[in-house]
Length: 261
Image (cartoon, rainbow, N blue to C red; front, side):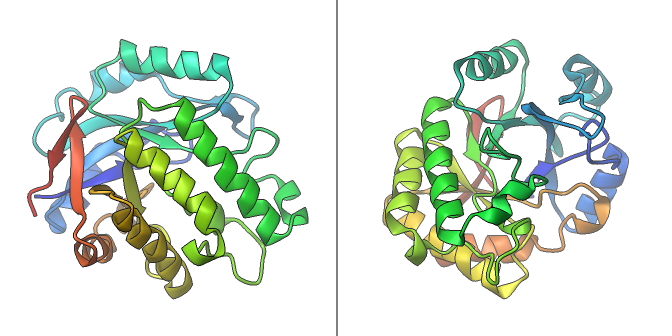
């Protein structure tokens, strides 16, 4: 069965899903799961504490579940500052994660989810800053397995059209995709917005270009925080991968494995 490679349970600050709930729903859709709990030292929760989780407890709690149906990963909030990079590398090297997702959730000066400062930029200026920062940050953090939700900011913007399309930022997106390919990092087909036509078309334009530039592998992730979303949109992500002859994969013990579809 194929893997949904982006899932959050109660170890993530913004999820309450239990592993049993997740597996029960995944079984209904003939899916396996990779858990990828949030670890963002450059972000803060509402109470001011860092976005992290008890990693040793995570492995202790889920060790009995780990196997063919469930793998244990992490979603790292990426940064291009040397101290963050060093700390993230140490976290990865010190724990037996199956898979490491890299995400850009902020641009140092503001949080892409909550900071209102982003709304004072034009769409052109905002995405120019985001894509430049993301490309540079991926270049500084080449140890990740896949780059998550390239269209993450689209969820939280306030423009007339929040979608990110290749044709609007071709050089910047090319540079980002080249960086992924050169470092053997997968592109994630994130399912959060894929059922909404403008966002699906935008993501598809980027996925298409990824293939044209030589990209081969994708991960397909629901970014699930509750069991009700698991599996429902997976066929759309799989169809997009197949449309461009991209190979869905997951990671086990940090080794890339082609999905059994």
